[in-house]
Amino acid sequence: MPVSRPSSVVKRCLCALLWAWSVSAYFLVTYPTRAAQWAQGTTHQLTWEKGLLDGVEGYDVELTRMSRDELVLVARNVPAKPPALNVYLDNLPAGDDYVFVFINSTHGVLQGTSARFEILGAGKGASSDQPTPTKVDNAFTASVTRGANPTAFFATTFPALPWNGAAPRPGIVGAGALLGVVMTVVGGVVGGWWVVV
Image 1 (cartoon, rainbow, N blue to C red):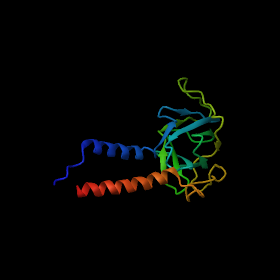
Image 2 (cartoon, rainbow, N blue to C red):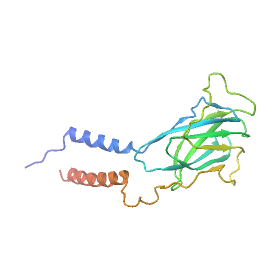
Image 3 (cartoon, rainbow, N blue to C red):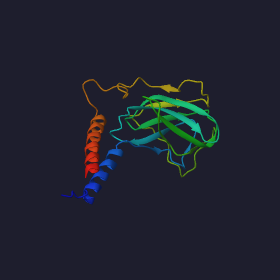
Image 4 (cartoon, rainbow, N blue to C red):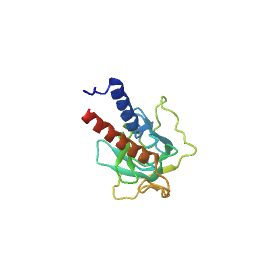
């Protein structure tokens, strides 16, 4: 007796399930945007959005320029929550090609980057259409008071994160790990069934 192929509804449900699993791990820098101008001698907010089940508890934040081989180590062990970091700038070279880089503190993999933005020269103010720089009250503040020096330490180092994802939390299986195991088993069963049918 011939066995019928899986219906399109099953295929659509399987695709939707796989898509939903993948969106739990995303990272997006929401500010600065492409048109942002940051004046020196002022505290600005760096903000982001991230997936809930990605298992990343903190980042190392770096500042680089697109046109030059320059790197400023801004902050180490920045907690993922709240999703903001106050950044005080002073004594950096002016340029319109700066980008923030977020590195996963656990294993050093690139997590995300901001859009290009402009840092104005000393004594220059942002144009009138720019938002007034504000601090995020419950966020940490990092002070960047020197230009690029790749051999220097981070400008600000925050305390070690209580759990950085390198090892499972004692007695707790993370939701992301559990979801991964379940999806692997379901994928194996559905894949095997698909081949047999």
